[in-house]
Image 1 (cartoon, rainbow, N blue to C red):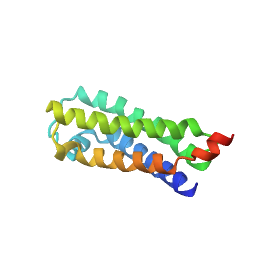
Image 2 (image 1 turned 45 degrees about the vertical axis):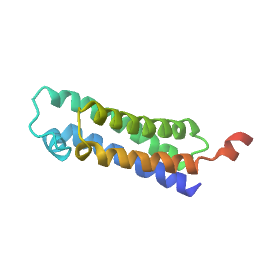
Image 3 (image 1 turned 90 degrees about the horizontal axis):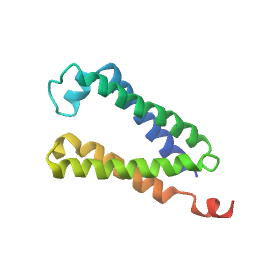
Length: 128
């Protein structure tokens, strides 16, 4: 159970940090992803995206303290990480971004998806 707790807390912390960067330093975030100069109006959308990372990140950390009690958030973490991988790969296939821009996120989310699936408390959930 400790592995799942750690994975949830780390994933939540990364989400919060990314969300804060998107809100506080949108130009630097765009540069970090290799997007270069961004239009001023996109900073609003980046801020909205940032809060979309912060809110679940907080609850993932809460879930990490007691995953069985917050099993729905564990399921959320699995779905979110899997969908992030699919969305990233789809964006590459569509030519919206290249692997240099999205690869780190895809790999990170894939690692966490595998960890969440491997560490999911199947027996404990089934017995409760």
